[in-house]
Length: 218
Image (cartoon, rainbow, N blue to C red; front, side, top):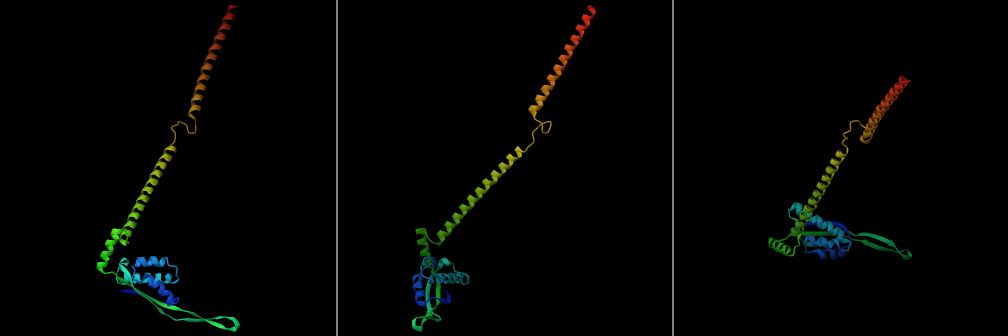
């Protein structure tokens, strides 16, 4: 049995007891859900106090939170601060700002009750153990999908790098910066020029020989 006490909490004991009555006798998980969705102002402070009692049980008594339930709760009247509010005709009205001392006691279920709860939770598919298994399986699926996505990104990066290396490879040209098509054209033009020159030289020689023969005939 472990308890936690909150002293001088703002709020009257009457309002605090309305919230305490809703969670008395429930297990910790269900009590937290009720306090989470409660519309009363004292629910916030009581939820913090419940977390403190559970933490005390786990740290001091080494009891897991899923084996605890709320055994007893009560609220005592604390110090009352007295204030005055001005009213008509110079009168003053007393205002009482009440506080409360709140106590929550958590206890461990018996072994028989724990076995019965485990059987019920296993049959219905609910409970802390089932939820823990679901979280673990969901975490494993997320980790596997993340690893798969990272491997795909790494593979794409390597493929792009290989393509970039192939694209940056230099061409097998004899002269840097020259165009092969233009080189072939220039070579063809040079051959044509040489053949034309030879033909012109042969024609000139034939012309000279004909002139010499005509002069000898005269």
